[in-house]
Length: 362
Picture 1 (cartoon, rainbow, N blue to C red):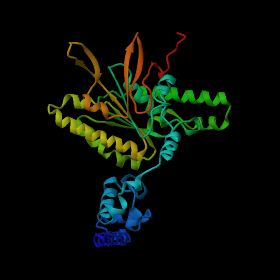
Picture 2 (spheres, rainbow, N blue to C red):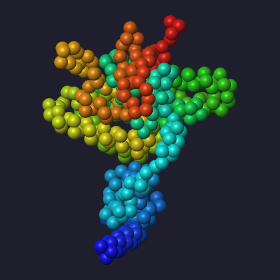
Picture 3 (cartoon, rainbow, N blue to C red):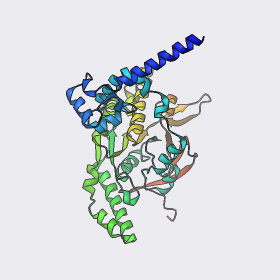
Picture 4 (cartoon, rainbow, N blue to C red):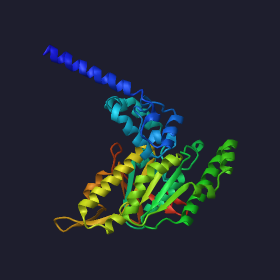
């Protein structure tokens, strides 16, 4: 047994030494396109050792290449260095580090204090938040409001970011987005004026509605194939536009409710798409917002009620799920699912300025 243990230990040491030696391999010797090799070197990835622990998103962003090209480079490196690059402990974090990262993240506000409180301060980055509801409840307007609010400067407590808006139904209205942006700008001007802060006033004076609309990257998709394809190229787009801090998909269900008879295939495609969106949220540290339709579900006793579309299997795809509904002629939001927030119900309103809190004095 002693000889076997010594032999196994020697074999392991030899394997580790071989892998360490392979990490000294020059990146320029990898079977990659010449521009990829040069971009990697220019970004500081001279040897395979420099690629250890890196993610495709990080390499793509730093080297200015696509995520597919970055993944190919890491895979070539992984063929000789996977044993040192892929152990779980290399990507692990302690709980206090995660807590501090989450505490420092700024959220995208909705301009409805009660709804923001329901969401823990606003829509969170690195998570998928789903809003479900009947037509006319305000899902699209909420998406447009968030696409405007994500641009609020950091000096005002915002993210100073940009947004990607994916429209599957043709519901996005540029005129309405302009109204919401104008109201947001007016709100910030009031804050700066009230605070009598010259720096804030100067900052707001450089802002205008046209610039705000230019910071919303709009995509119209006409079928499920385009929707899935766009989600899969999002990482590359976000690498080219690192200012994007929010992705809105309005709505996730539209094409998948109409085009599929093979439910198993639909489930697989939805799972793949949602995994892609979760990777986008985590790798690019953006907030992902989905709107979803509702459908009628009949129970055994003949009772029927409205439930989010796409079935029970899709219910676990989002980090947070919010149900929007009417109650006594008021719009309400109920936090149905969240891993860390309590389920509650709050009222919200849609005004000429966008999403706002309910005026209790009226």
